[in-house]
Length: 270
Image 1 (cartoon, rainbow, N blue to C red):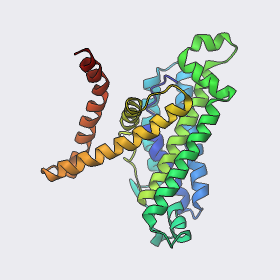
Image 2: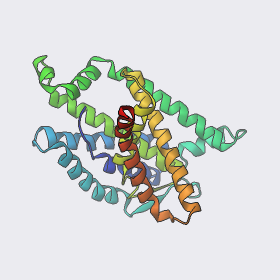
Image 3: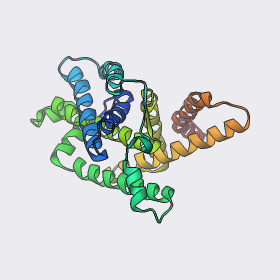
Image 4: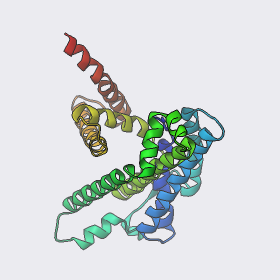
């Protein structure tokens, strides 16, 4: 959509906070996930309204929403972090799957479930982006003026696209909260950087301009980026670095990734 959205640093923990809130109120994981999706969509709508109706620049709109969401997330959680321990009666999707497939190692069950979930979301998103609304959203990112001449309101398409993206981000936050077993107010810091790096890695590793290829690029880039981060951290620990150097490693890794396309072009000329 050609919209640099910084809302994700706030909507990611928002999804986790809403999910944890519902779990502490005794609701099941599906209710928490659905409400997390809705909360993320509302956060995206707020950013969209700031940009389309208040005429606030895209970057600033996302920053303002992200700042507001920090306090909102604290309000929802009641404190900076919450535990989703099974001992407290909080049964997440992962604990339900573990009990349902107790004859298999838990790590395999989690891996299979996440693969199925990610691929299902990919195909659903592929199908949506090929509908009339999906095509309009894509066209809005390419050329707003052309879209307007076709009788399509680009502001409406921006609202739909930003809401959808933040709903997915909040969903990811809710899933990660279940995976790690706790929610932290700062868990969304750096999500924009990670997402950008993942997209660039995917574009370098896999070429293609079709919807199928582009969504696959994002998935592949995310996996490779996280693996590279883990390897870099393990190597750093072996030479004496500490856990609080995580952000340093992440920043250096992103710099290398962002510089890679430029270096590749220069090497070709040489």
